[in-house]
Length: 206
Length: 140
Image 1 (tube, each protein chain N blue to C red):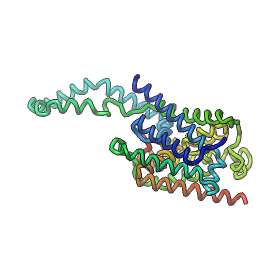
Image 2 (tube, helix red, strand yellow):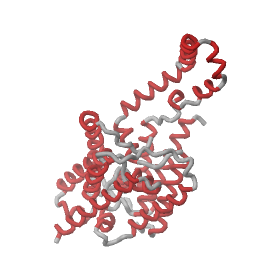
Image 3 (spheres, rainbow over the protein chains, first blue to last red):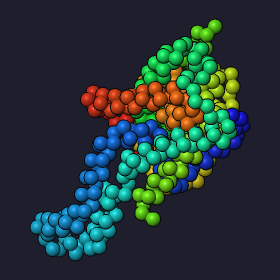
Image 4 (cartoon, each protein chain N blue to C red):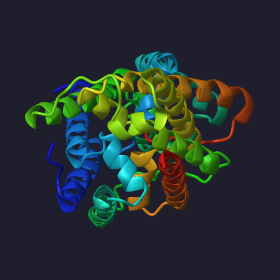
């Protein structure tokens, strides 16, 4: 595959990052989607909770009203006026607008696969392979060793990104673009760690 | 259009765009990535840094509208990032790259996929039982 020059890649990635904000109103973060998909059961429970809250909203408003009357008397209601109505109805916790079901995150991850597939097919570079790459096999050896390395590397990536609260997209792209201190520290740390180990693996080849 | 349908379409579109762009840059190719990490070829690093700077400039225009990100410095920030960095160097995958590797036909990335799933699950269990600090989760 003929890869994009660095500036085109920068424009493409920045476009994805900005579009993510413009379309969804939040910044890009892939490990967050992973957490939602892996924790699908919690996510489902929360969905059901929010739904029943939304359904019981009128009932709850009545209860709140009755409670207010009992506690403070009628004068307090007039004092509050319309203010209280608008406050209650615009609360996102009750309407559940902020909640994204895990299936949406699953679709997001799945379409990343489709995007990679399209790029490979369109450039005529799609080839099924049982290993990752020539250098990777050189470093790790036989096929089963490659697979074992990938499995354990994957566990480290999964555990590490959750522990750090973000990954290349969340900390690296979104967090650094907003100059968030924790994200800058995280990005420098994972880049340096990856470089250090890569240098060591490269040295092991000689 | 119902808001939930719109969400599905937007997320699908963004996933597609992200996967495509990342593949065309070359991040799914372990050899390219390895050469970036040992400073033999800095093209992809420049793409990444360029993207950070560009989105910084564009997002600054909307800075009042961007929800405050819950990204705090917590006890897991540094050890977690180190673990992720080592894992990235070994598997060539971050949480999004693994899908792009699979898309370009690298069947071996299935092992990485299973590994990441287990890693996320393991962290969920261990965090709930032992760590319990606020990780400032990524995204909503």
